[in-house]
Length: 598
Image (cartoon, rainbow, N blue to C red; front, side, top):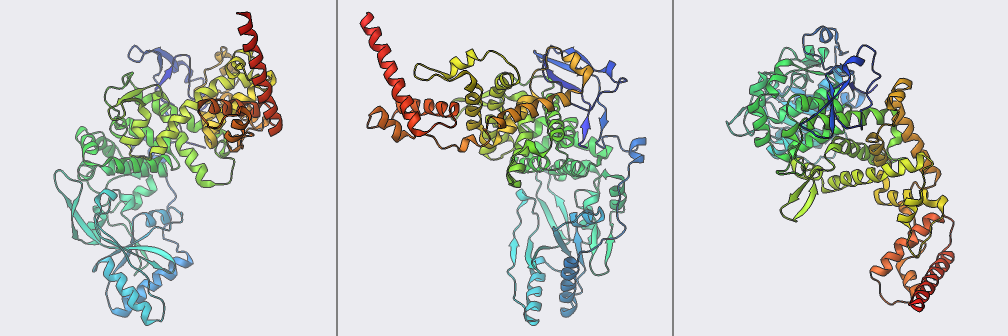
């Protein structure tokens, strides 16, 4: 089951009540709507903040004491890993290097949790990574094997690379080599002064105890040199090896890394860690010392991982929301009270709704990369639903730009295409709102029919739904299911919402609505309509109109021809040309009669 949460929520008046878990009768008296005078048009849901599914309990509480994670006593190596490690030990022994080879960090953690990992980082106690790689190549030459290229990754603090790392292929697996180190930080910089250190110093300078474990290849053993890495792993606890506040002030990015790992493994943030992460000085330095690219990278990893809602809840609860998602100055309307709560409530509702429907929400094709991209941008779109009608004046372009676009492009430094897609999803979701009503009921389509038609184009009444849906899908393309889901997420409750809640869970209600509308669109044979080749291209239209150059008039007729094609899916090019000729002739007769009347 996905992580679920009952939260204090900021909700549109008469609108979204995020579909959380089924409410027990005991909680019903607590779920009451309270008007907000600081955020006009919204209600607060008060005063529940009970966790379910996440390990959101405080460390040391009875719930936390009962919490346990299955951790293996030893590391079980794959055949390939055994071959790699034997090769490395052969190098050490042949040259008499006396080097202790230790696999560091995440690989050890994942192995103890019974997970596979291809991220093998080797820590060396008496030489640099580059020197050791050169010895590996010497050994390969001696045994008659092809030498491998050595890649040296220079120090790059912006990419969290504080010490030179060497990389090479060992038995077709990329391995990183770096020497053990200790580090100290300057007062106003997250760039440390690096020195060669002991294994214990190296373990203690790492971000979290669960990431400070070593696997000693020489003696085939796990080393827990902080004295609590394995214990914290078993408890599912996120703790820093050294005092949390000092650790975060040294490198404030570690705050976001702690949140990310807590979300990835559904672990609990230790109380002292939460206190340090909420410290005003730590928050200030996270915003001033860490590049926006690094912040955006951490957030993107959270969004792409298993428990993005937990990560966003932690960011909000620790008072980091406005540090991470910095807003532009002078937005219109201004940032409202509890905006962070409403944003997080929307991403939770989105997560629960998508999970209840299944993977079919995202691309029906087989491209897993496209599915992952749709899932990621769906979550960003949901998170920023409350901001979709907020704008700011961009000084360079002198245009009003959506605040969500600013956050994605400037606060997180993600791709411009990500910002564009989220804005397009929001726009399409609002168009879908009208379409949902149209497809879900027998409402009078005359008003919509009049919007789609003009003096040259008449659309059959039974084709209005297909034309309307087709035009929306051609704009949003592969992301149409995502936009539909966002629209359903924000869809107003029915007038008899109370009756609905008595009969079924609202999550099920929204799920069924999505499924019905999605099926209606696919039954209209519109999935992939954006790939539809126009029955008439610009050149053909120019020929019918007997004009030698294009222009706005040709573009207008291209749009008319597209609507005709959507209304007549089996229509041919000749039939479309005949319709154009008849429309023009009819229009000319009407204009001629009008002139004669005057």
